Length: 384
Image (cartoon, rainbow, N blue to C red):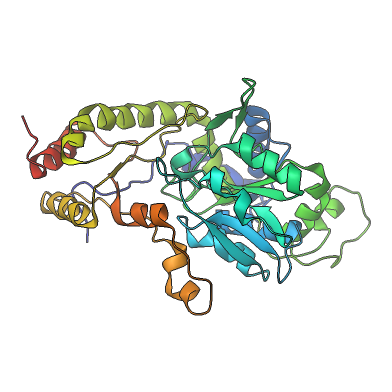
């Protein structure tokens, strides 16, 4: 079903088809060509990432990370329950046991104060998810990782162009703090190429093996650089690299990053300023911790109950506006409940029942935003 105001519209800058044609005419469209290199260079220079590798999805980047840190059956991996299934699947596929952490009371991200009590002798990694592009407290997480000799894999699917400020004032881009990180360029993200992702490697020990895993377990990349005289099967791996067509599309988006971000900031700010009065009906606005920046990935409100959220969704639909809820707690999923531990994660369940995402895309007009805001306020009996 189509809506007058959909939840998302993928943004097109105008250069995508031009660059795709350039890629086709170059005669190299299978991946790791000139546009892939341009994308890698952009991220490494702008954000200080040690090494970047484009992938076909964020899911693939997470799966590569699980292989790189040698996840084995019996290893435990700590992550939030309030996240997309790919966060867990990547490690489950390697045999890991998932240990779920509750969300913060003020934000859907994992509660950093509850992580240490979940660490055991079997713990191998912590996977913080930067929900809505808002940083987890990475200083606390990295200190725990160092203390217990754990890996940190940042799920930065939503976090492009967002930062964390350490207590000493040092600011680092999300995805550039943990040992490894995964980004998404799905069409719902700030920057997109339809389907795409990226693995960020901040620990150089993973550089060579990451290339091998990405190239079906072969040292093909080293061969094309002239470092070996032939390539062969040297490790496990899969076909994780995207075509040059995806990279060309993505590079057009990268060139417009600042313009895109400015437009998204305008939309986010409009929602925030005009929906504040909804707190009279128990609606809460997003919270930004003092150490985090806002990359304007999404705008959500927190309803006081599932019933109130359902009311708002239906009222918006009656005005031809699509709003959506988000994750259902993974510890409540049918797959998990078959044979796994029973959890009581009240904050995670609260976000599953109460969080409502509003339409958010670069071309969303102020008049459409006004209609969305007024529909919400009217349904709560708060209109002027």
